[in-house]
Length: 287
Image 1: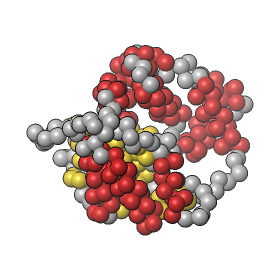
Image 2: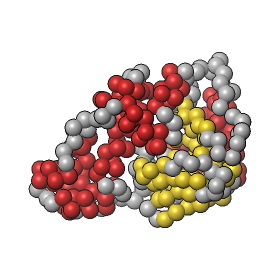
Image 3: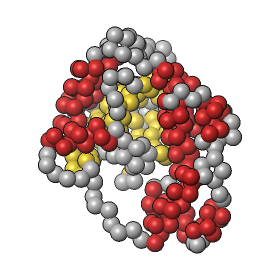
Image 4: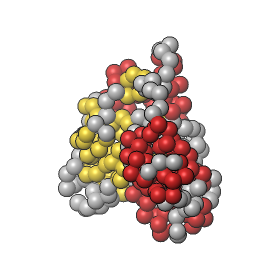
């Protein structure tokens, strides 16, 4: 896509039908900011111009051209422009299975694969991420899948490890997990914090603190993220944005539009159109 102005933003979030388990995002953001959220799978992004600032639990990472960002599943993070011109990037969202299948071929070590750094200067890996995008856009899934696996293997070899073993859960962590289960089950009509704490036999402040410690965000922020995740699955299945909004507990479609766009980076209508238009190898599309 052509950049026609200093403040021009554009984004495309899509899949290739023959590259399962991987979402792709190409975008330029200037004013857009991503609120605190997390992903079920991994995030692998290559900055091609500008600067992106990513907020992770360890601090803020400034990523410029040639930098590769690596975010593990369920790690809460934010993102915004680090310069007035914003940033341009190509991002891959491989599922946990995709990354761990590559890790299993590389090593006999057990456990879930993890990247040990958030941002690294690695122009070669950044070029490979862009090559995956280019191959998918050209309708060449063999090349896209091949380059994807080479790139993931290289990043795991240089910056990989395994997820740390989970420590025994404290009472607070157990309360947080129970609260999360309640919110998932009653997403359409969630209880208030006070009612939820009372149901779990704890206090609102104790539950708020435990939930934040466990999931990196307060319950209401987590619930918004969870609603958007569920809305994505519904849109993938062909549900309309208006129907998805009500199904996940938003009061109307404008509320879904606002939160979905902030977290995913594109409006739900555009997201659904790309899913409906996911093309086969013989297809053709422009970014």
